[in-house]
Length: 118
Image (cartoon, rainbow, N blue to C red):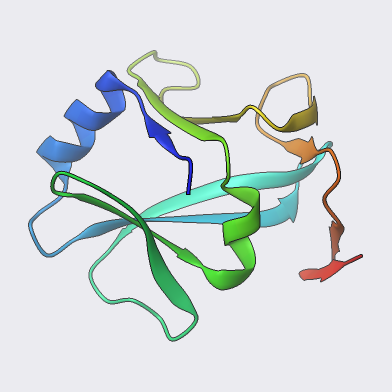
């Protein structure tokens, strides 16, 4: 899987994650462009999840249905007062909303009502 963690995000995650923790990344329906990334720190994987990237002590875990939307993902970090935190961009993005918080990907099915429709 082609996921890039930029230096600022790598530093933040190395400082934040304990050895038994991972970053869970998901894709859900939402925002004005159709899809949004979500992230949280976890300790226990769910049944439908797998590790999609290991970079040093950083592990990224995603549910199987989200993995196809993670190809080309770039994770960065900003400590800006407005829109600070982890930042997710994707080279495969077709459109984004004005605030940059949601996106759609060219050639991917739409997610409607929480399920993927071709």
